[in-house]
Image (cartoon, rainbow, N blue to C red; front, top):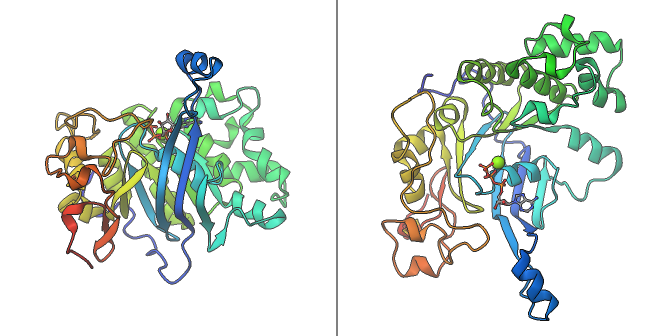
Length: 349
Ligand SMILES: Nc1ncnc2c1ncn2[C@@H]1O[C@H](COP(=O)(O)OP(=O)(O)OP(=O)(O)O)[C@@H](O)[C@H]1O
Ligand code: SF4
Ligand SMILES: [Mg+2]
C-alpha cells in the first residue's frame, strides 16, 4: 500500500470556513468499574474504598472538519472506542460537550436531534456481532431508513441502490448475514450505515477482523465512498500503514488523553511527542503491509490508576521530575500541529 499522499488526495479539501462537523470540547468519559471481591467485602464491613472508576477519555478537545479523514491511534485501552462512541452520540460525555455542526449534541431535541444522530454513523469491527443474524440483508439495510421515513420510492429499489454502492450484488438481499463472507458482511454493515444518509462515519477498527487480502478491498471502498459522497471519517485503527494511507490528519491518544495531533505526513516525518516517536520507531518491519505497534518499551499502565503528571512518564526516556507531577498541556507547536509535552515549552505556532 502506498505511503505517499493520502489515497483520497483528489477528494474535496476539508471546508475550513464551516463549523466542524463534530467537535469534542473538553470531553471526559468516566466508567464505574465493578468492584472485585475484596472491595465488596470491605464495603460490607464498613471499610469501603471509593468506587473504582476508569477515566476512559480525559479532557479531550478535538475537531473534525467536513470532508476530513481523521485517523485515531493509540495502544489498546487508551480510549479510542469510547471517544468514537461519544463522537457518534452513542455515549454522552461525563463532562465537556460534544458539538455537531456547531450545536451541542445534548441540547438538541426532537426531530433536530434525530437528524443530527442519523448524520453520524458508526461502523464496528465485527460485522457478525453488529448485524441481526435472524433478519435478511434487505431488512437490515431498510430497517432504519424505513423507520425514519427516508424511503420515498420502493424499498427494494432503495436497498438495491445501497447494495450496489458498496459493491454487493442486490440479488443476495434475501440472504441472512451468515450466508455472506466476512468482507461482504462488512459491506452490509457499511450499506446499513449509509442507508440513513450520514455525513460522518466513525469506523472503529472496521477492517481489523478481515483477512489481509480483503482489508485492502474494504479500505478502497472507504476511499471511493469518501470521494463519491464527500463523507467525513473518524478512522480508528491499530494499523499505522492503513492510517497513513487513508488519513488527512492523525490523532494520537495515550491513556485517555490526546498527546499529539497533526497532518498525516507531519506525524510520519516530524513526530514531536516522545510517545508518537516510540510508536513509529517500534513498528515491526517484518511485514510492511500490517504495521501494528505493540512493542513499546515499558508496560502500559492500568487505565484504572494512570501515573500522575504526564501519563507517559514511566516509559519516557526524556522524563524529568516535573513530568511526574505536572500534566503537560496539549498546545500548538506549529500551524495545525498540537503536542502535549513539557519539552515543547518555549515553542509555539
Ligand atoms: N462500558 C465500560 N465500562 C467500564 N469500563 C469501560 C467500558 N468501556 C470501556 N471501558 C474502559 O475504558 C478504557 C478505554 O476503553 P476503550 O475501549 O475506549 O479503549 P480502546 O482504545 O478502544 O481499546 P482497544 O484498542 O482495545 O479497542 C479501558 O480501560 C476500558 O476497560
Ligand atoms: S512531558 Fe515529560 S514524560 Fe511526558 S512525554 Fe514529555 S518529556 Fe516525556
Ligand atoms: Mg476499541
